[in-house]
Image 1 (cartoon, rainbow, N blue to C red):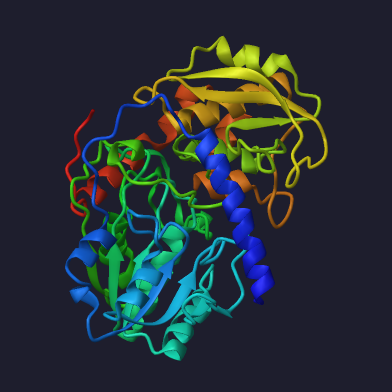
Image 2 (cartoon, rainbow, N blue to C red):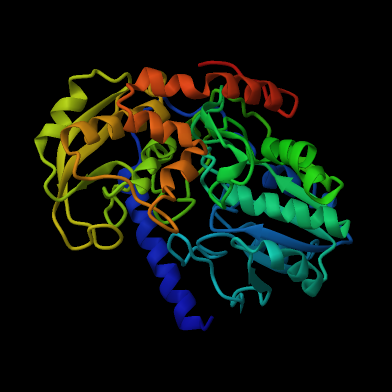
Length: 426
């Protein structure tokens, strides 16, 4: 990647940051005492956990200190950490790529550190680590709490590679921004495993990346490679599972180009399901996953939705013209979602209720297939074909939600022993 391309991508991220500042939720409680993320705890201990090792870091623009400096820059300047390589997930290490893309190999112009593309790179991950001479692999990325957000699967593949090679794996933990009191939604079935869901966890998993790493390393990695990785989680201080991101006092950096606000992240476990339909999920607008619609949709959808009094949310009739992705350059009608009460809002039930209702009032917009007409993207996102089949059969939201009740209870029990932080309701 040449310098002009990198700088051009950085400018795009800066534009996204402006959207974040303007679009951030203001209707939430004042923050509590500032939470210390894992990287801050590591720094306060003078990076002793990484001393004397050749370190690789998987990160992206969210890998920041509380003063907004990137951790790679801070570690490099400190002289206490020997960083031999950085690795970027989907969207890249510096965040210059859109959905489904990583960044090509480049030398970071600020530090001179080589940066590799680790996005969906299962066959190459171990080779990259050997090529870079990594002894300890660090993971630090802000997750958003949904199974189909791919950063957690980059972490999983890296855990597998670390286990195979006998490397240390260190996770610098960060908050789950959408509250992690409980898990919700369907649990992935193995036959629907893709990079938007590799292993059987709930659609809204209710865990931090450090807790997920513990679960992955204990439950899934040994079955895949025969052994667990040498895992260390540098825990946060001052965080509990009932917090939303605003409660932490930490700065919000958009984890990806289409995740500008905390409310976007809260909607995402439900409205990302519209990627599996012919409707736009709002990509190419300033309100992705909050504006949804298509040409020929009008006020009828909003009226049908508001008549249901779905808890914690209201809908506004909305019109938009996406600049890219589905229906780019065409005026779309649909709805804008406004969260009115985070405590009663269930994103998975809401997203599926919206799909059910849309199919009733604007049935001409159907499913999106992947790799053939009978390979439905919804099955990959929900991880359970029965959800789509029930919707097609005319089931209501209560009937659809009952499909995963038992499996969700099993996952809740599985995750219990891997939790690090207290779960208490607000």
